Image 1 (cartoon, helix red, strand yellow):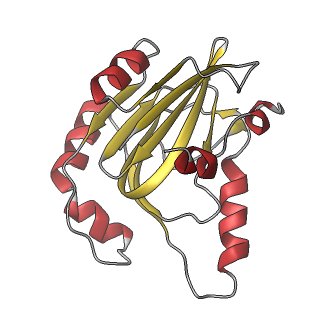
Image 2 (cartoon, one colour):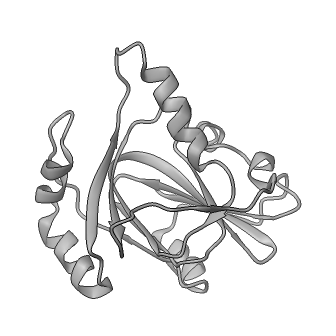
Length: 190
């Protein structure tokens, strides 16, 4: 189940809100222009291609494209592998997103499988949104955030973009992300 946790940005030891209630999550996040919703899950192959994921969710994807004007959509598939390169690849993928950054584009992600945490640093609070299968999170452009997929990434996520460049982050050179519970810690606390 989805989980929203809120802390002051100076004190990760003080939880101000922890909720799994979808309506409460929606209400809290919409104050900041962040939208949260859920889609019905579809059956996917064990290791789906981007095309298979997009086809399974074609109606929902088309509706988001039409409403938001996205021109590029893909599916990111991260799954543990027996490949000896997997641990290094997983570590590099995770580290890419672990620092605070912004984007000139909205960041819309739908989790078709697995989970990940978006940490939104808004004002003097950090909002950790643990997204799981079925969750669609839409983070407005220029929102300071970071993302943690965990030390053993295992997810399928549909990504939406307004331009062909795809994911482009502007990193902020802060240590805020290092002060808050990781994906693995949040999952273990449930």
